[in-house]
Image (tube, rainbow, N blue to C red; front, top):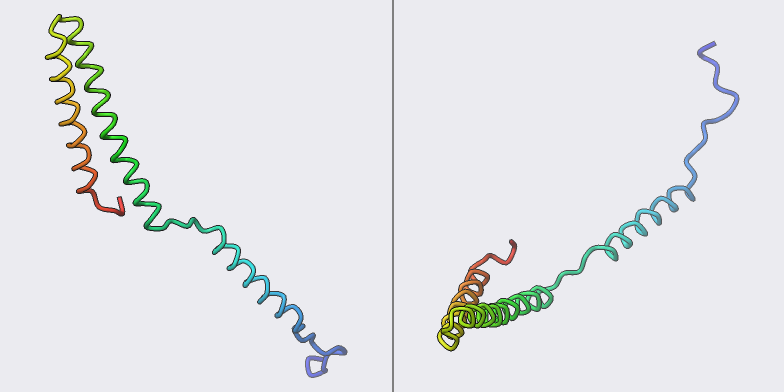
Length: 106
């Protein structure tokens, strides 16, 4: 009995299925490329510039407001404002220097 050949021949793989699988794989690859986040150097530079601007403005405004408030409540208003503004500038530049020394991939 084992020597008998089967009544039907085994089915060959259909060429249409192979073509469909290839097209499906190509479509999935195109979709992955389309959905991949596009981060360019210009975008990273733009974010870095905004960060520097925010640090600088925040240091200046924060230092001047806090210095004015301290000067107002202690009665040494122009000196409190000047000291607060100076400390705000120092903090802003320290943050900018720290950001400039950071590696770009972090």
